[in-house]
Image 1 (tube, rainbow, N blue to C red):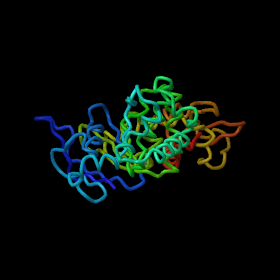
Image 2 (cartoon, rainbow, N blue to C red; image 1 turned 30 degrees about the vertical axis):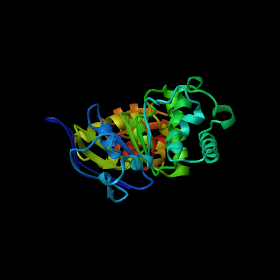
Image 3 (cartoon, helix red, strand yellow; image 1 turned 135 degrees about the horizontal axis):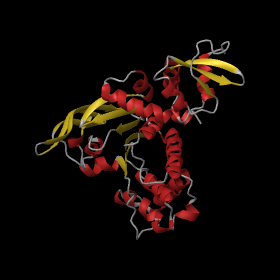
Image 4 (cartoon, helix red, strand yellow; image 1 turned 45 degrees about the vertical axis):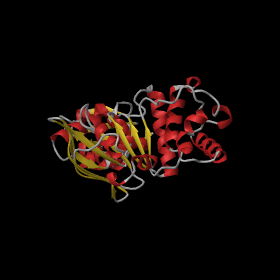
Length: 318
């Protein structure tokens, strides 16, 4: 669906994207992540030509993006920003209707599409279509921003840190809603975030950028099982400690098989209610720990935890 071939972007002598090669598959939820200044937003903005590339080629549906009319191409790519930028003087209906109006849809089709999209994200159209943006909460405005990007049913959605300005509870709810929505609409989504937990939760595949270069592309499982270099390993170390907080001791103990007889190895003992991240820290200095539950003991190793992480995503753990 989208392919980068040796793409670079320079501003004078400064290279912000350096010979990037990426292929985003049709229907894939593809996440760009990296530290501040890594080039992730620039990489995404080159897809719909908000930023022009300096070298290389970007292909969309098999054709170089330079072969498309910029307006035609952008109509095929919905765009969701961190700051929603709804038109404050327009109703929710009119905000969503902007691209359909540009494409000269008739009023009846626009009204039907607005109602369909509001229903899709849990905003009853009879309650919300005639409201103004100032009457909505941050989470509701973000939902409108998402469906506005879907108004003409584009095959690609670009999302630039869309949830980062929201409070943690609203953010988590919208992540869950986006996953549920994607399971229905199956769009190709390119999603920029600086949050490793968000990337691990949402992404089918993740592209980790550092100083404009691709460090690794892979599924969350591949990042856990096979980090390609020290930078990725450090990233995975941070990611692992975050992700482990989403899993219970009991779930991981399932991998350890049958209980053993007592603490035969005089290893550290951890308990059912201990944080899994604390268990992981114990494993940094011991080959295993003993988990005590209901008077029985299980022997758990670092490999058991990595095996568990390689088989589970954050959203499956709750």
